[in-house]
Image (cartoon, rainbow over all chains, first blue to last red):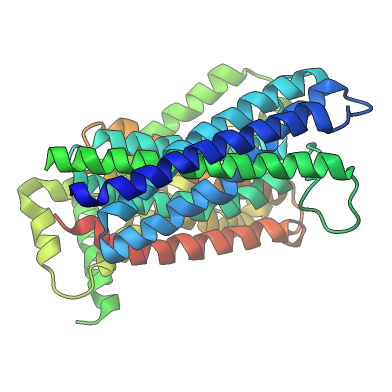
Length: 226
Length: 225
């Protein structure tokens, strides 16, 4: 055991510092380099926190839950289970950050903390879906059984991301269309794009760092419990 | 024994048990009736408001009675070691899932038909012309509900806070099915052709297929011990 603890530990620390570095760069870009938005003013800068959190939670964290759950059911690898668990936890936290910052951004721009718009609703549905997943995990003592059951629920929850997206989108929409991943000519200034991209990379690094830490912790807990 | 026959036997066993005890069906119909009272008490006499809210109320009724009914799917198997008997049955275990889904689907459709009739009766709504379209919507929506509900019932049957966890897990996952069903029901009740809500029906069909296939593939993992 002792011999292979060193290398991942150094890697993890390096990753952590890299995440801090890029987050710092993102902060500078978001608050300093990117121009003040003409209509919304400085409040628009919350986007550099809001959008990366959503993107990493929805397209990375929950996708990883899906893949790790399938790998667990297929290979019964405890690491895959820990990855699914950790990824869902970090995803829920990021989704919570996105919903909270969205509310703070919504108050001055839309005049309301919350509205049942398509994206807000689908974010809320994903949030409670994965909250339920974590709740299930907490309620089963037997580690192996918890892993199997949560893998099934995790697969359903992640598959459902697509259906939630379409159903809620058809239901209603008011949110501004995505400003980054949109076909056609760019409508935002390059410095805004860059600030956003740097922040997305920063959040992705933070996600990877938190997940690796959590996976290590879960594995240790398993070793102690066994 | 073929796959279909094994699924059929599980379904037949459940139907016979239910026909002899009528436990779940009676309770669910009574429960639905009480729901109607509650809707009436909380919404008051304003008929226009009631008719406008009808599609949502209908599905609220279906969902609530479905939660009560589906949550019990595997509880009967816990008595007299029936669970072990099911596990010992030879062949692909997903046949058990298919049989249970079919049983739940039948149960829910019966309850839904009764609830629909009671709605028409108590709230004085004419649903006669909408029945063919409504039947299709109800079937598609209920398949999606039963497919996930049956699977999650198998999960929560072995968890401490079963009654608490089942709805908490199931309801968020059913949001797309519910939205689609309510929208399609709205159109059906308004007398619009179903082609107006074709996108919702396509979503329902896609969700039904995905849920059923995912259920068949993962059910085996729930049964080990």
